Image: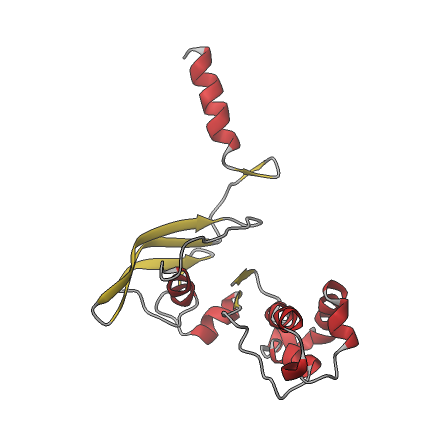
Amino acid sequence: MDSNEVSNQDEIDQSFTVNGNFLTGKPMLEVNHIDAFYGKVQAVWNVSLIIHQKELVALVGSNGAGKTTLLNIIFGLLRPASGTVNFMGRRIDRLPPDRIGRLGISYIPEGGRLFREMTVCENLEMGAYMDEAWKKRKETLAHVYGLFPRLKERKRQLVGTLSGGERQMVAIGRALMSRPKMCIF
């Protein structure tokens, strides 16, 4: 092995790190060769990706590129025509969304899909509907208010009267209330 091979291998090894730590162990999320259709129209072609713990990943593409379709497949809102989705080593592409949520994935859909006639606090508490999250909702609510102090100021206000940015804070906060292992949005 010559010195060029060593430096090239060092470059390759560094590309598989997060904050200088090597990505080891099983990935949190594996999407394998996903194809998806809406009727006869194919929306996603052979998409694969791997996400490890502590990674931040962005799907970037133009309108109609399949980003939302892929997220809907990961969260069980749409079934892939082919391929698999695994979370924490478990296949999830055939599970309903509530089971996927219980495994630790929280989904923040485009637009947030909030309850406009409910208060900020009520919307946030809706995110803690699972037993374990409900038991710790006060602690988690304090954490969310720490991340988004504006929400604490507006906790009794109807969500429908908030600004767009404040509604997005509520949507993210509601997802965090389930104490997820992974958030997708």
